[in-house]
Image 1 (cartoon, rainbow, N blue to C red):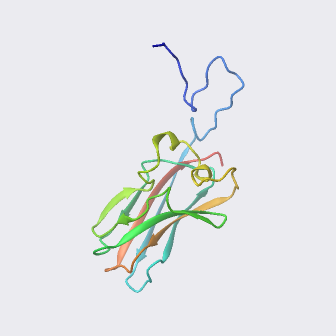
Image 2 (cartoon, rainbow, N blue to C red):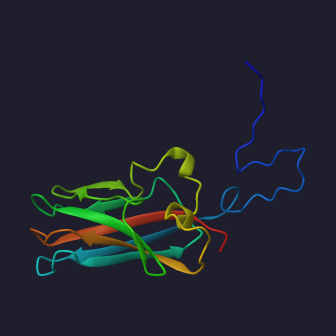
Image 3 (spheres, rainbow, N blue to C red):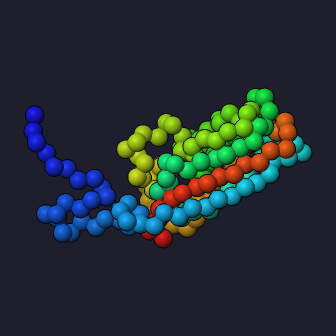
Length: 160
């Protein structure tokens, strides 16, 4: 056993005056995008709905949510991130059951907590930040059984 004093990536070790802490990790402003879209039964399966645009270096708050009406039996939604034409469905919620009205986290439960502080581009497996904006969108996997609304409340911090 050993007594240790460790510092997270959001706190500078007082003995280290050279390490820069990114604003998005410590003291940065949390921004919020709230978007609503109506999904109608006339829309085809696999239709996509852009819900937000955020900087590629954004760190998404795990409290971000998607709220939804009842879409009907067997209906699912994927929440995707798109950066420079690269689509990632596995880091955001994938196969969300929207049969009944409710809400769910935007971040998928398979994201380990040690990755919560990673920027979006890193979560997507990219080796560097391409810059610009990422589109966060919903993909309806089957035709909605009833006209329904989706509302996303996306919170994030960014250096941009």
